[in-house]
Length: 199
Image (cartoon, rainbow, N blue to C red; front, side, top):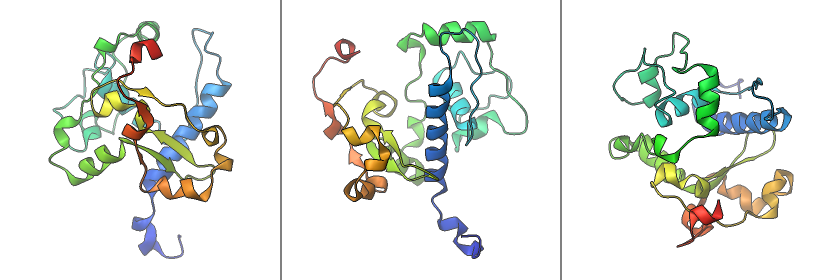
């Protein structure tokens, strides 16, 4: 790829960044000990995306300083030149996350962008899919049916995943084509099922 720099813009950097980040999150969770009140998780990839997601969805966590009016792209409102510190002390953050109330979450903070930016419209549509992203190593799934509260504002009961989701190495070529198109999340949920009974 680097032999022809003119092709850099055609590379699917978003796929690579997402797959790397999710893969590293899986490793970190597997290797951590959640029974301990204080433990450190190390991530590779783009962990800044998790921080920005948390600031927008959990306003009680976001720092007051540096916050700007919502603009596009959304990450610009928090700036990039200085380190941001979350508002509550660490012990309070841990308690709030562990005992979190769904009413304290802003589930769809970026819906106002949906009708004004083409890239947001495309991302919003893809967010309602189950998509296979091909990264540096193994492919990584994005499960649009499990985050519908963040896209359409409604909880849904997902259907059980296929066995291949537990072993990405066994994914056949027929599923690999969905790395670009995806499968609609509406086909992967159980309509009219109670989400709270499911939980």
